[in-house]
Image 1 (spheres, rainbow over the protein chains, first blue to last red):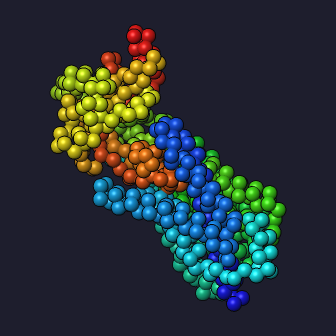
Image 2 (image 1 turned 120 degrees about the vertical axis):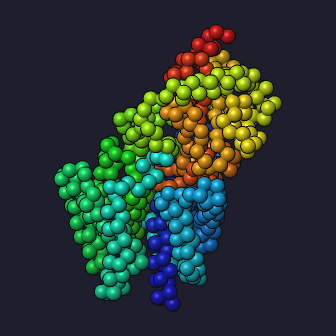
Image 3 (image 1 turned 180 degrees about the vertical axis):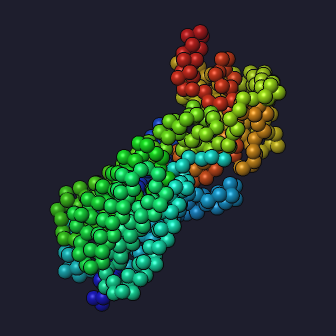
Length: 142
Length: 376
């Protein structure tokens, strides 16, 4: 039981770090989207980028082994990111016979898949008063 | 075709990539030698530190920036290995870890003043930022403000890396000998992000090429004069909804796969601008090949150089161009990444356009539009 709990905390630790990086990348993407929106007149993507950044950063702070809603929110963003990117890859291969650059594969495919995998491997343990107060303290800390 | 170095691997950095392949083997070896008790997050940190160290050590091989930069690469690699060693022994990376990682990231920003980013450099910086996120994550409870400040600092490093990479990529495209003015190409130049050019021989056009280009321009001006009235263009199928700005491209989907390419009367797009008095002005047309990768007919030799676009983001909400792929590999959320478009060429119909098949300078465009508004 203790080993299992430790393992869950360790994996969530990695997930939190990856989510912080992803959230920051989404913040940068939002800033770029606003700039592109001024050029091309597409403001919807800036709003979606901002919403994704906020979702990831807030859900990351609230992420706990026994709490379902943060991981559900994270899953929505990650699955949308991966799905849209995979559609793009298929279209690219069919139309342009080309793959996206390495960084796109890392940040839009590898990173979301890593987060999904880590969150799926962390068990939702029953909430105990001790665990709850300990995790709340860490939550504030992160 | 030549694209922006930002989306490619620089040949100078190939040794760094080769060195990076050693890291998985090193991690496997370290795991066998008793590092199994380390938490997963610390293993990730060790991997990232060793990865960055390997790249920096590899860059020593192809380094052509002088001995001072070589020394910095060597020092960075040595420090990163030393920090990885500390972590493997169960000690925190500490202030040294923060200083070396932040120093390495900020030094990269400085390098962007003189050279463009490339994929290996950006992957390395992304790895260093992730390593820093691990190093600065709180191991003891902090006050809310402290945690927020650390997160904010990390986000600033990500935004800074993105911004300086854009700067480096655009600067080199404007500063290289034989610089590009927008879409126009000269041999030996570096394209800006998002644009790819064929390699063009550096020579003057032959008389026959000049004549062919002039004939085509004349035929296009004659055939498209009717589209000076946007209503006529809309009736022909050009999408003019939301016409705004000084570079509005109205496409005609019916002409994109009609079997006609480079037909003066059937361009795939028309380019309009809205003058200061609110009246739309037809500036030019864009001819586009049907298939991606199909080369356009360069009837005027170096006068009529076709180009394509790379790594463009296509929005789904609503459909349309939403930007270029970020240095860190993302598109605005809700957009699909298209690595390459079909070849295309602009033909500017306005009298006195300096380069009818190249790029129309924005300042020139504004002056022209002011003159048009004053006339009407």
